[in-house]
Length: 263
Image 1 (spheres, rainbow, N blue to C red):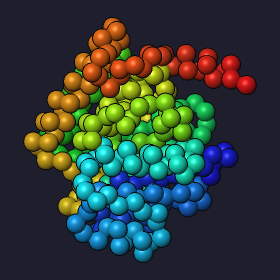
Image 2: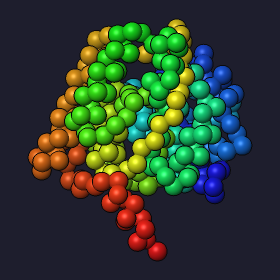
Image 3: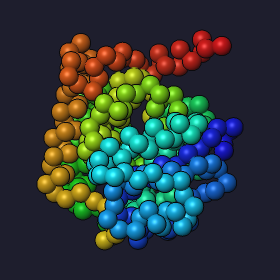
């Protein structure tokens, strides 16, 4: 717990048996109150390892995809009364020790969403990110900053945390079950005016760490561009059939003003 807020770490897992114990060992137990692992029908011993470690575990009977896994993660976190929810990949690609500063930023009241950015600093290429992924990351981020009228160092980190208010506000269940889920959700957060902070995050690329191949990366990139174009259309009132349908656009100052009037 931090600032009297209950901190929950969610682990969307798929074949993470080889890296799960290392990941759990570095989670700061002094501030984390709850750990939830959702296994997306793994074919290895992920569930067995999780149970041996005493982690609350939910197992999908069929593979629902990266986005589908996260939907269960966030639903369970809300059901278990989390105030701060941070997604950490159990493949040990992102450092669990950053959970403390990320939780602090979310508990501070200054930010509603916090991202662990691989691009801030020199962490990405030093950590082994393939050059084509680095270049595509920079290009997509540049285009998104233009289309979403925002400014982030990257939109594609899998290390991200949210306040309970965000998860109760954003209709994440309507989003894709595939990898573009992350981008749709972040775009919805911007559309709704939630305040986003970033911290520099070193990352590691190694054989046991999960990573999508080139073909799926292209599919993801197309989905990102489609989401960004839909964002602009929705800002103009054309939101039918998009993940922004029915949402009222807000600016960050509107969110702050609304909070200041709450009893």
